[in-house]
Image 1: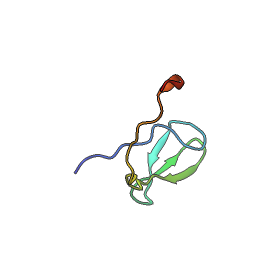
Image 2 (image 1 turned 135 degrees about the horizontal axis):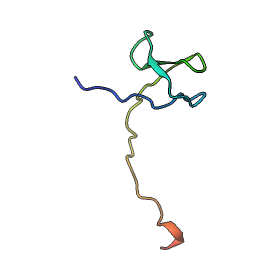
Image 3 (image 1 turned 90 degrees about the vertical axis):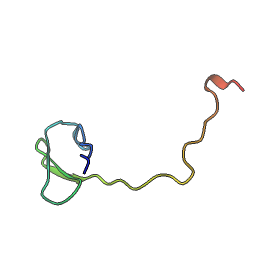
Image 4 (image 1 turned 30 degrees about the vertical axis):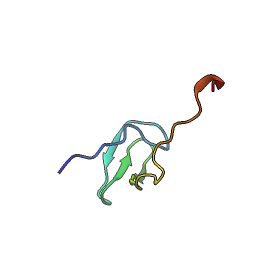
Amino acid sequence: MTERAAPFYCPYCGDEDLRPSEQGHGAWECRACNRAFQLKFLGLLARGLTPGPPAGGER
């Protein structure tokens, strides 16, 4: 089993004092702002990556 990536900072206050939560997979607690949040991977986009227009307006 591979390890999952951990968030680097709280999405609410930006602090880095995060701990895994007992609420379940992907749940984290921020000790600075006292909030809990959950991260969830939704899936890949069906269209995938498509090249955008060139930078600088060149064609």
